[in-house]
Length: 284
Ligand code: KIV
Image (cartoon, rainbow, N blue to C red):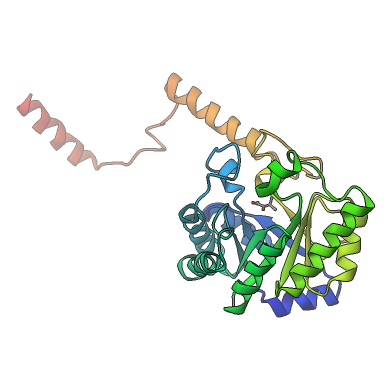
């Protein structure tokens, strides 16, 4: 059964960890649901992982809606969070609400996520929450702000920077967010934020104290290998398995081993085959 915000609050109270993972397509989502994950994030990381862009910037609302719908079809009983892509919420509250509404209506996500802890992002969180949509804030190493951070670097590494992240987290909670995701910070910072917020705090590269853990699925199953962040643990080697299968197929097609007509081919009754041969001989 799909979990609700109430179930997630109860999990936090009972100190049960929330399992959160990204997903971008129907098939992967199906396996994630079978494995029993609690929450799937259709992240704008799909730009790199699925669409082959170098950053998340080119990802559009239409991309996000198409992929979130596919994930919803693959995992109809799992709570799905749709990531607001670059420039879908920055310009005005009106555009932010419009795009969050599109997500909810067109791909049936259960919550949306947006990056940043600035005053204007908090305004967007309030505007979206005010129309009844669940919002997940996202602070720390936020890829849409990578240029200002000087690249994809861990955040909150000084006491002042850590206190600024805590201030942002509290502001996001006060703005009406139902969850917050903290990314790429030392474990003590993840702990300080988790202990001071009452909404569920999810972490990715934020240590073990957060209420739940997120990883990008393609990193943790060894599928995306362009770059692997320090905080990723690899649980499978899907890339190697795919390579093995594709290479064997190439070899077998080229050397005539596949298909084996006794196994991989449809059959025709002997009399029909004879009849076909006769007709073909006549029209030759
Ligand atoms: O897009 C995404 O997958 C994300 C994670 C990096 C947290 O936002």
